[in-house]
Amino acid sequence: MAGSSGSADNPIGSFLRARREQVRPEDVGLPDYGRRRVPGLRREELAMLAGVSADYYVRLEQGRDQHPSEQVVDALARALQLDDDAAAHLHELTRPAPRSRRRRPARVERVRPGLVAMMAQFTNNPAFILGRRMDVLAANELSLALNPRCAPPTNLVRSLFLEETYARELYPEYEDVAVETVATLRASVGADLDDPALTDLIGELSLKSERFRKLWARHDVRDKTDGTKSYMHPLVGPLELHYETFSINGADGQMLAVYHAEPGSPSAQALALLSSMAASPPSDPRPRPSDRASAPARPDR
Image (cartoon, rainbow, N blue to C red; front, side, top):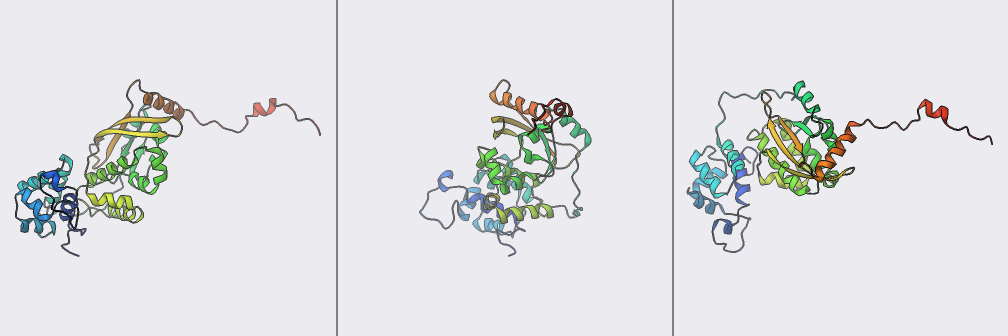
């Protein structure tokens, strides 16, 4: 329904409603007068905290006013206790799109050959490049050895939620990884939610994964800049790896992720073992001609 706070054409209202439902009255010094129809803050409570009228806030959440001032957005961000990533996302949602803007046909995301060659030299560091919808565009050998599901053109979000059994075995802290991944997807696409490929991805995952559907509805936002991720690898055991990410100049939305272990740690030893295994070609179980020639003859029966 047009104008509904949950409709696809009202991202500001969807964001505000989802985030106010995550703030408890006691978190912001308000009394809790018993049972509420929905969790979190009421509209009039958030309006009071942000210093705007309840009527004006209702117009914002219902999509009847989609371009509040910078000051109002800052006040709402403070009232909702948004972190820097989420506050920046709210500002992006409320900025008017240029009138002359036209949607260009979706282009195939390609990785420069030089970047692929560079990653191949990272023999001790898993590395891969993601597109704006978190499709794996390129990955080095060690990254594939760490997680075979990281092979292009895998979508990391789809793999995480639709191959959940495998993902839970690989990631001991699966729930944290799931929350972070969905929040990173929101940060990556920003306010551009009319991308057909993105719409298809979100629709597919919402239909097939209740966990994804609930996390997407939370409107969490997190730029994937750095962090730590735990693995339980079937060949080398547990690893704790740190990662750093880098935006790629000249490739809108592409991101290079590079993982590393703490020097001298058990994880560094396990990663070195995995690197040596990845560098060694698989053995051929078929007997070589010389083996067949030197094999003892079978006794006659």
